[in-house]
Length: 214
Image 1 (cartoon, rainbow, N blue to C red):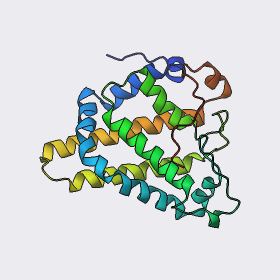
Image 2 (cartoon, rainbow, N blue to C red; image 1 turned 120 degrees about the vertical axis):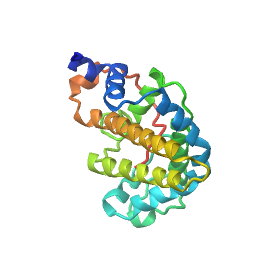
Image 3 (cartoon, helix red, strand yellow; image 1 turned 60 degrees about the vertical axis):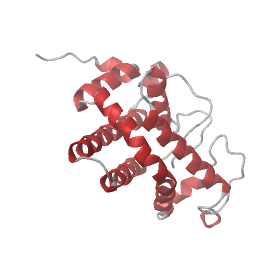
Image 4 (cartoon, rainbow, N blue to C red; image 1 turned 60 degrees about the horizontal axis):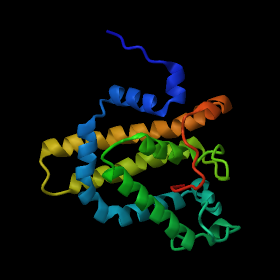
């Protein structure tokens, strides 16, 4: 039996879009529970992961230049040249802290309600030129590469974790993979939406950018 999927609702109803993705990827409550169970393993490693992420972004001039743009909510000054930006600067500490908050929210979220879905969506939207007050507009290619790199880092943590049986380890890797495909889609939709789509979306506008990895 073929299930009907309404294309207009996919583009304008965040909950409907998530439910379609969940069915397609077989992302279930069991996967959410596995992500929650992974949290105590992941959290002690988050500072190292955050530092590794920004070292990677700093290793290419094409991604490093985005750090000349302040995050909304950061009251520091914008440096004029990329060589003036360091991994130890206040702005970079701020970004690492926000990335930490992101990870902690993802892996402790037990109910993927509408507010949480809007949060995942806003993370994508704020990296585009559609976020209102934000002037950052990261090309999607860099977002795609970054999400792949993040997944690699998390799987590496999981793979080296002790006291996990093979079945749980495999299931958790799959849950992480499914999550990143969902988050990736919640980025992609903002890069592919037309202005009309954006104006009719049921996403609640957010004034402050609470997360910005690039």
